[in-house]
Length: 145
Image (cartoon, rainbow, N blue to C red; front, side):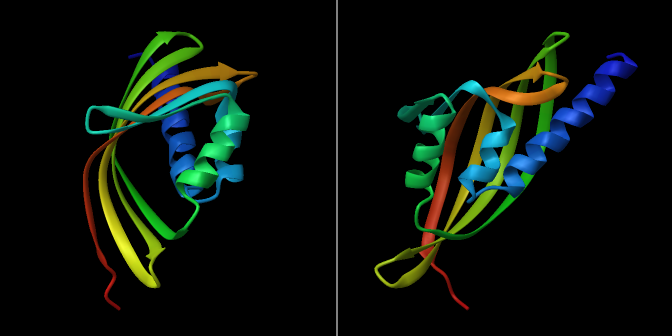
C-alpha cells in the first residue's frame, strides 16, 4: 500500500465513522451515500430489505429505525481494498446497541454486524455506493436502569 492509499484508507474510515455516528438520523446519514446507492439488509443468510437510490434508502431507514430511542455503535476491524483510484471495497465489523420502545417498555437489542461496502470517490469525496448489512447475532432484553 502506497502513501496515497494509506491517506485514502484513513479518509474512508473517518467517513464510515461519521455514518455510524449519524445512526438513527436517516437524513444525516444520506449525505454519505451516492445518489444511486444500493443497500441490502440480511438477517443470517436471508435478505430482508433492498433499497436502491437515496430516496428509497431514506424511507427504508425511517421505517427500519422508526422507534429507535437511542443507539451506540462500536466499529471494529475495517479492511479496505482499492479496486481503482476512485473505487474501493470494504469489510467492516460492528457491535451495535439499539434502545427501542416495545409495548411501553424500553428494550435493548444488541447486534453483531458486518458490512460489505463499495466506496466511490465522487467529486473528491468518498461515499458509499453499495452496502450489504449482515446481522449475525442479536440479543433482545428489557433495559434495566
